[in-house]
Image (tube, rainbow, N blue to C red):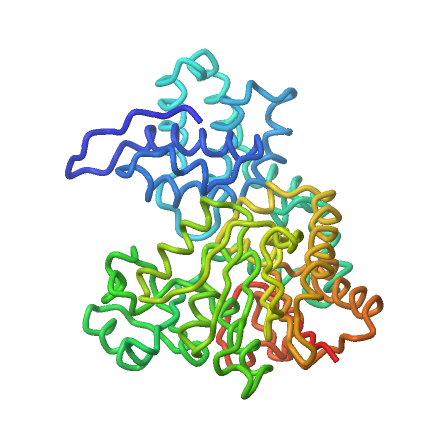
Length: 446
């Protein structure tokens, strides 16, 4: 990604044209297959927060913007111009209270085009497209409503898969994906109890509500540096759905959880590893295939005052890292499409391709096959993904049980959907939108 110069720090916010230049570069990166998180690493700290907020808004309305651009331009312009045009169109179609008036946004988008060599020659074209959109906005939006990608701002294959997997809830899931997720914290109960921490938040003007045994959801998001005791390890950021993992595994182990040997496969960045260690006196081996991500695990555990054996290795190849001693518990948070965390990562829907699902399903099956022999008889394997696609959840487990007569399924939440569904057995007491989409299954060895 082209590194744009940071504006000098002043009392005023950076010009909108400068922000649009940055955001359009981020959009171009996502359309080229790079994650927004990775692309944001190249944005200056002075610009990052504003750029992320605008980029998230664009990702949530990119489907509509692409459909509109096809009606406003016969041929797609060069990628830098196209990214800027899509950025402006997405922000112009954003519903609810707009931070900028439409004509201000158009004017600043044209200024952004004039300010860069890659887009300067197309500034007039950009201006014409955006002003035509403002003149015919209602008609153009109505025309694009016939396109599911525009109406729901998700790829067509994604919509069709949800319609098959969740025929009663697919539309509610797509609507939930368009909402910003709350900042959810997991309280380190060995350091401070959740109610006491909630009182400390209130003393700083931060209102929070309880979600689960040790979770707190803030009414407004703030940087972690503003959270009391964060540097001292009092809390960690973790979605309420993800906070189900450690209790599900430890509860299944029962009395055997005391001093149990547990493998956390695919452990980075270490949130579930930490939750296990916060909840019980267990011996945890945290495994991840990426050495750089293992450093992140170590840093997170250090902040929390916790310790685990951390190893960089492929969980599918136990011969390269396993010492031959079987585990009482295994937590397999398998690589997946991340289709359940679109609220937090709105670019995921545009990064994934339909063929990715089959490839990830194969990887998940390989992990299950490789790790099952490492589990003691009577031990429990908790399989989870942050996916709402059945191929990565219930279908995967059904296929595994058909292959393994020495495995049986214990009660578990199954598919947690990121919607207010009171019939969902997962988190029945949660308010609207308090957890991402997940899948959980507990497998015990006979």
